[in-house]
Length: 286
Image 1 (tube, one colour):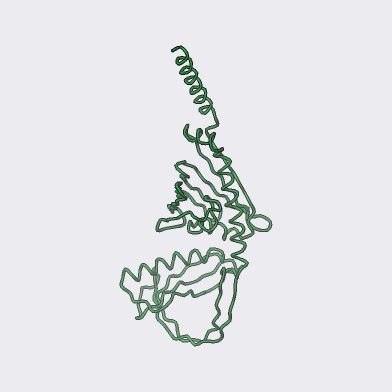
Image 2: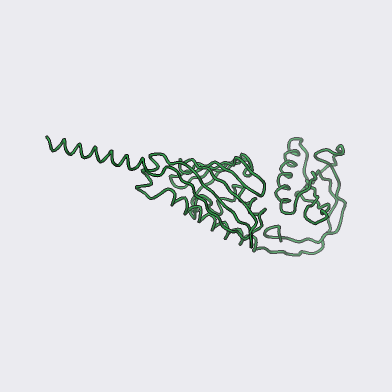
């Protein structure tokens, strides 16, 4: 009977010792990684800002291509959300603050573990220096799991490292792979269109044009305006230093629309003309 009591006491003391050991382990993690990516700052910022791109480079999922992603309707900018499943693990990340071409702040839950993520972008020789910082706290259960299965910090460091490596490989390859085909002169018929006009830097034009096109498309649907072909962009003028451009995003429509000057959306007509038709496969920077 005494032996049983002693065994029970030893087990109890061992359990207390293990509990104390786990409880005294470091309860925070603060990981910072950085890398120079061989693309312009605007390109890199816009790429990371859009969650649809994350599944291509495994920013938080490493090299595992079995992850399944879902997104909010808005996939970039403030309030955008991405969720993913990877085996039995799940993750979620939401953008809480952005400073254009400078930084992105996010809240993440990686396999039930809340984390804060911050991205910073700065000019560097040969491209853009991107830094990513991941911070969070470990619960008692997280600490116990880390002792049995390896440190949480080490695993997250490995995932971030691999994500930045993938990011560099993918973006550099995408930007360097393109094909331009000149198809010759073609005659274009005249068409009525609905347009929205704006100005942007050369690097931000594509992003801004996408937002404008979404608004135009929504406007035509809401007002039952029949469209007549693929959208197009009219380039109006360049800034004095060739760093800004004035342009109009246009949706061709079947019937002419008259609008008040200064309206958000304006009607217009494209007269028949002869054009040199070319096809670009790849990034628009070419």
